[in-house]
Length: 343
Image 1: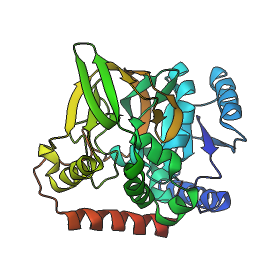
Image 2: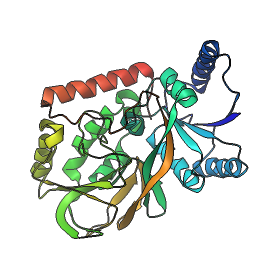
Image 3: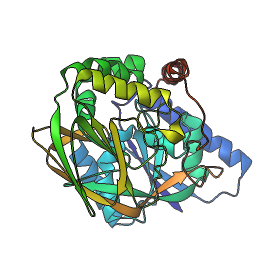
Image 4: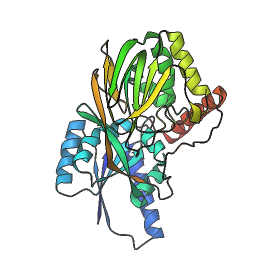
């Protein structure tokens, strides 16, 4: 028997828990009609009162071998909340049912954003091992950020996320950079030290973390045992906007904006002359300084049978115009509004 525990974040989406349960029942009926000889499946649900209560319950059930697959019905932030438990119980597989603003981990792994496709992946997919990262006493699977990128995550109103989806971060980001605090960064890796004056340092485990439209680290792969680091340098707001414009306009496979320092490493320490916010997978977790290191192939995530074996974003050199990028974000916002998925 396959034992599935569903963690449902009732605050993550515009659709109701009842609507998700209807989609789950319909998909299970469909799959049973296709294959009546399918093995037995036991599904339990947990709607947590708090992250702490959720982790306590999950630890207890995992310790008693009551969970084979953990299905997270939420966004990237909800996924982050369960990672400390999955580090302790690596045999438990993670299934992603996108229910948040960006759902970027699901995007990078080729997991459908619609309920039917995500539930089908939960029930019939295969596990793929990917990396995760430790950041001080927390963990993340997708992205950590210091400085302006953390401020954007913290200050974007929930009402805007419900209305505009991932586009809300872009809109708020334009406002936020005008008051972004520049700092001198010292980034120490295994082999060298980088020093730069700027507004943000981003540490990514996957290619797409600004949404599917602007891959800032197009060569990043979630299972290569390396973190991709971007230092966004800036001496003025003009520098910051020109850097973002370069990132938008350049072909993804040749992205090398003059104010972006990009490198790969297994671990690093980020220090700043000013105390700056730190976020991991959308959650503010503290302030600088911060230590980050990769944990190779620790996480098993259920992906569709036809999912890619490498990075989800194409490597070919395709030119991207600003209009194309705006169309991409608008289409993403439209799809999010139609599906009712927000954070």
